[in-house]
Image (cartoon, rainbow, N blue to C red):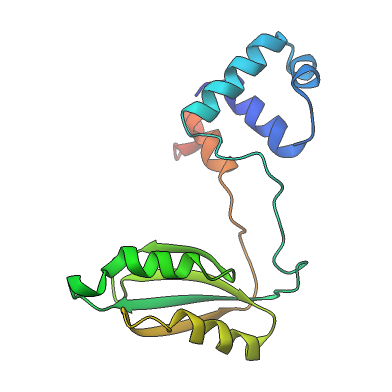
Length: 163
């Protein structure tokens, strides 16, 4: 990535409905350059999607929690892949990651209320591949999920240097 890629990402992140022609006008480069850069960023996996960002809260799921899951360490039970497939089938599971530390997997889930959170947890625990879980409820989001600042450090290495 270079500075033009960074400016292109910022432009589309700020104004996702902008067209390639308008982006080329704002950036002062040819339309073909913008299209080629977007194609390169998508093919290389830097840009992973063009869909709208959705708000769980606006969809009626204001409660966010993090579940640390301990997975049964028996190969016959399927392990991480089995648990991952199970979690993927639950709409309230927004993401799940295999982790190091006290647990084996961390899942971010949402619910309609604290009472509904129990239903979501019960659904997560329906598989015998999970031995135990612990739950932490998020009270407020201090830094939402973001990648743009990271992309800026790639295009401007001075941002990562400490003076």
